[in-house]
Every structure is written in structure tokens, then in C-alpha cells.
Image (cartoon, rainbow, N blue to C red; front, side, top):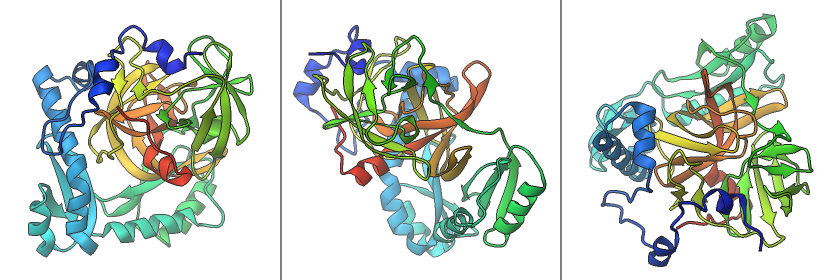
Length: 374
């Protein structure tokens, strides 16, 4: 049987057998079980000691588990939430302070919001629905609970941008900021560990699911054929969406199999995937891809619309973990929890940059898939 990209790159240090046999998942109240190498990676990314990195990962795991209950406790007063690394807690913004006690009872802290998350989401949806679309000078837009506005990023001012901002300002409260133009991160055929689409485009595997793996939709359309690192048949795109979303499911064949692992590329130990709890804004996140390999950063925002040249991509999560062409489709992890697949970004891993990912839970729900977990 042929070995998948995941299996090949992890052969030197995987040590899966005992972990898979145990099948253990840490209980919600316990400190998370951390894959080897994760603490050093977070140390390097944020300039922390080993103890501080382990503490932060534990706090982020708690915040991710608390967030759904805190949001439910806030009810209609929910104005957004984020992880505060300085205090090590989830912070929930509220339009009605009478809900503060119920939210704090879940383990979160509270602050005041000027606008509810529901109103901000509706305002952003109205911007998404503008009939003229966005010009190339607009990089994207997202809800910003800290300012109670829809935050628009502009890369090139001009009359067409002014017209878009005027139209958007009629349906949403806006904050406008400068920022580089994002691009998708697929690449032509180059050396290195690939999966190739139709013989000429290289992308990166996201996460194993039962029956195949998920990746970015812009890498290939439904029916596209793929080959693995050894040039052998890997499978076909069973489903793909881009633009609008940036998601794809590749059904594997030809003797390939799946494992619940994200490659550390020798920079960190290969990482086991144990679930897909969504990390809050402010949490650390690391990504793996076939070009730039392993890099970490922070979740900066959610539900952003990214205005690519090919069309708008809605519902993206923004991070400051860098990526480069060929990394498209690759894995984003927070701790041992799958977060999403790399979509695009700006900059590179020499001078720095930012990236967006397609949340993985949306892919699983859309296609009825089950994440392969340890």
C-alpha cells in the first residue's frame, strides 16, 4: 500500500501506536494532553518560557470549552468574545450588563459592548450582499466586536473604493483601516512534498477525515484528479466550493489511508488531532504547509469576507501566522484541536504576513464528514 504525505513526513517520530490504542481524551476539567513539540513551538512564537507556554495552552483550551456556554448565557446581549492572553481568560462583551453574572458563572470575564453580535453579523451580511461587489482595492471586511463596527481593510484607495465604502456605510457602521491585498496560496508544480491537482497545481493536505481529507476549494474543482508526494494516484475532489467558501473534500483511493496527524516538518514533533473545538479570537494557532512548513501566530478575527481576485470568500478566520504559495489547504491547529484549512494571505515567512483559513467545522458539516481523531 502506498504511504500518504502525512505518513511519509511523520515516519521518523510519529509513535502513534500506544496513543491510538489508548484512545484517551482528556476530560473537560483537566489540563489538555499536549502533543510533543507543541510547547516549544508556542514558546518560540510568543517569546514565552516553557511553563508560560504550557499555561497559555491550558488556558486557551479552557476558553474554547467555555465559549459556547458563555455565549448561551449571554443570550441576546452577546456582543462577541475573545481570549485575553494577559489575563488568561475568555472575555465576553455584553450589551446588557444584567447578564454579566450568568456569563461569569461559566468561567468567562465580561466587558461592555455597544452593539450585539447579531446586529453586527446582520450588518456584515448586508455588506456581503451589496449588488456591485467590492473593487480590487478592498482587501476584505469583518465584524469587530471591540469597536462595534464592520472593519473594512483597504489596500489601494480610489474612487471605486470610496463608492464601495459609501454604499457599505449606508448598511453598516464602518471602521476603515489600511492593509495589504490577500492572494490564494496555491502554486505551480515545484519540488517538495506535494499533493498535486490535475498534474500542475500544488496544495497541502488539511485534515484527515474518514474516507479522505479536506483542503481548500480553490485548489481544484469537483472531479479534479490528485496525485500524492510519490506521483501515484491519490484520489479525486468529491466536492469543492470557491469562491463564496474555500473548502473541498478529496476522496482517497489507490491504497492511500488516513491518520489523525499534522506534520511538524522536523521543526516540532508531528501533532495528533484530537478534535475540532473552535478557538476564540486571541488564542494561539499554528499551521502546517508543504512550502513554509510550521509557523504559529494568533487568531485575529472571525467571519471575515476576503476579497480575492477570483471573488469574495465569506466566513474566513484571520491569523498572523505566515504562509506562502503551495501552503493552500494546509492545517491550522490550536493545541490539538483542528481549526481550519489555509485559504490565502499576504506577505511571506521571511518578512512576515497574515493568513485566512476556512473553518474546518463548516467543511465537516457541509459535506457530512467525520474528522479522523486520535
